[in-house]
Length: 187
Ligand code: URA
Image (cartoon, rainbow, N blue to C red; front, top):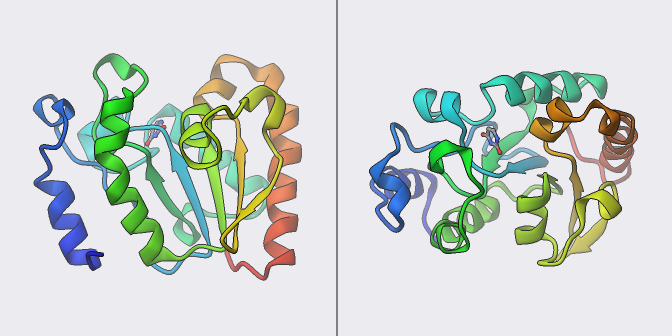
């Protein structure tokens, strides 16, 4: 396992998959290194690629609004993505790209040691919870894996496209607040 400095360096220099060719920046992740709550999205979009930070584009603005519903600020949780480089045209990251990047996320997760992990959207849920995870049916459900409570909510981009999903997400966010209280997760 790498320490934070080694890990960030390895990511910055990474050429494990083809995405390095088109990236402007590696989007490593942000937040307190000892956060109790970690969010994992899919991969950087255009703004994230340009700025080197996760969720700073339109989906990020909505994520901030979503977090504020439960009085959570992005400064109190750790935010990362399944892949750290932008897939061209914002396509879904390929299996081979996710595979290449997973060691980094696993290492990051082991360093942060969150009590709660929230997958943002289908791609993260299928990778981190179960490969056949169905976001429409299973969002908001909780599983405990090796002492970590995990759930998935709709990706903010999906909520921008389809506002009819927002009431469900409101309930899922309240459940995250409830779980945080239950397991004493600070934010
Ligand atoms: N969508 C994601 O999944 N991650 C980001 O960082 C931005 C948009």
